Image (tube, rainbow, N blue to C red):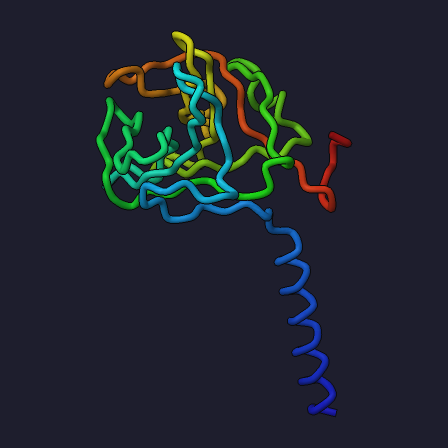
Amino acid sequence: MSHFLLNFCVVFSLLIIAQVCALQEDYFWREYTGSIPEDAVVGGNDINGNDVYIGQAYVKNEGLVVVQIYPGVKEVYAPMKGIKKVDAYIKILCGPRENFYWRPVNSSNLHLSLINKRAVVGGHEDGMGQIGIGRVSHEGEIKIGKVNSFSPESAYFYFNDKGTERLLLSCEMLLYRNGSLNVTGN
């Protein structure tokens, strides 16, 4: 009987692990070295019409912050209590591009507008919570930044504007649709 119980527990555990793995999104963060991977997610275009990409950078004692990546440039500028230059521990968002989409949001209705939606997690602020990925059109180009989605009363969008951290009340937020998990029909 104990042999049967052991086998049952092993099989049951494997089934649970398989189910959990099936629930994981099929996007991921890849180490960024200056080269753009083929499956990198385009966030928009710069003022010259070149693609810009969605990045994530580690800022010591602050967290993993959403940043904008320009092809071939190995440093990024993180909007985190001012602008922090980061040249190590940078990742780039990769995955099936057709599953990503942008949704207009603002700080007063962010949490309501995300009901039954899957926001892409852009990182976290230490001691605060997860942050989302946002973008705006600013002075002729797309700016990628962080949305403080952990705070219902101050879910603002922060981005780097020529070395200055800017805050906006509205932006577009990156969401993800997964055919097997789609709860919205999008």
